[in-house]
Image (cartoon, rainbow, N blue to C red; front, top):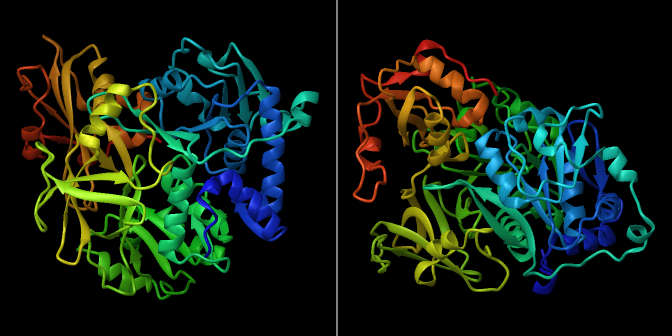
Length: 544
C-alpha cells in the first residue's frame, strides 16, 4: 500500500482520493441497511457539510455527536471536517455529571443526538454557551432535554436537505495535517475527563499504522463491532479501511453470543477486540463451526495467558497486539505469523514516527533494558500526536513534563527490543474495554445524602480477563444507614452502566495524604475481602 505525501494525511483527503480512485466500489454498510460506495460517501458528506454551514458551523467550531454506530455518525464527522470544524464524538453510555462536563467543556455549536440516547441528557444542566442547534437522528417528535431546549431543532433528514445559497456555493475545506480534526474525551484520574485535541495527521496515522500492521488491502473486509466514539473503531478500523480501500461492515455493538455468526455473514477477513471482548468470545460454548469463517487476523489487547493461545488454536485466528493511547497514537505492534503469541508483548516500536522510553516514574531517568518503568513517548513528525488537552493547560503540561508524553502505564523492553505492557500506573480503571474515571464515580456517590465520602478503585478478580472490576469504599454520613442495593439504585441512572460499582465496602474513614489526596494504593491492594458486598452474589443487575 503506497503512502500519499504527508501534507495529505487527513481523512478529508482520503475520502476525496478514494472517491476518485475507487469510484462506485462498495465501501460501507450498516445493520439498518444503509450502504455507501466510496464516491457516495464523499458526495453525501459534502451535502452534510453544506447543511452544517447553513446552521452557522464555521472552521474551529465544535460539533458534538452522541450517536451509535450509524451512518449519520460518519457523515457528520466527515461533513464537520470538510468545514474545518472539530468533531466531538461522545461515549453513548455517558449520563449525568459524566456527560455534563463534556458538553460544557466542548461548548459545541451543534449537537447531533440519536433519539434513543436523549434520556442520558435529562439531568444535564445547560452550559454557559448552549448549542445553537440540535439535530435529532431518529424520532422527529422526540422531546429534547432542557440543556438542549433553547436552540433550533431539526431532524437529520431536515439537516440533509438544509441549504442556503451561500453554503451551496461555498468551497469546502482541505484541512492541513496540523489542524484539529477531533476532540476525544479520555477519563480523568484526579479530575474530570480530558478532551484530547487530535490533529488530522494524528487521526490519519492511527489508520495508516493499523492498515500497515494488519497488511490491509482492497481485498479485505473489516467487521467493526466497536463504537465510533473510540479511536479503535473510528480510526484504527474505519479510517484504516478508507486509506487502504478495504470494505467495512458495521455492527451496532459487540454481541458475544452472535459474534461468530456475524463474522460469517459479513465475510469479514479482519476484526478487532478490545478489553474483555476476545475472552467473552472464548467463553462461548465451542462448536464444530468455530473455524468456519474467513478471518485471517484479529487485533486485540489485553491477551491473557489463560486463553490467548487456546483462542488462536480454537478459531484459527492469530492475534495482533499493540500499544497506544488516544493521546499518543499506536506506537508499537507485534508481528503475528513471524513470532509466536506472547501475551502482553506489544511488539516493536514504530520508530519511523515515535520515540519510546521506559523511565522511572518518579525521576524520569531511563530504566535499563528488562526493568519495569513508565512508558513515555514523543513524536518524530509534526501533526501526528495530540496537541494537548482542550481547555486544560495544566493537565497538558503535567502529561508533557520533561518533553515526553507520560502514558501512566508501566512497561519494559525485552532483549529483542520489543515493548511489553505490564500494568497501569494511573488511577484510571479499565473495565469492559472502557477507561473509567474513579473521580467521576466518586462525585456521584458523594452526592447521595447518606454518603459522607468515598474512594473508588479497580480491583482484580478471576474471570475479568486481566481488567478491573469497580470497587467503592464508602463512609456513611453520621447516623445514616444505607443498603448497597439502594446505593447502586442511586448510581445506575446517573452514570454509564459499565461504571456502576460491582463491589461496595463500608469503612469508618479513608486515609489521606498531608495534601488531602486519598491514599488509594492500599485500598487497591486490599482487593475483595469477606467484608466486601458483591452485587453479582445477590443477582443485582445493572440496566444499560
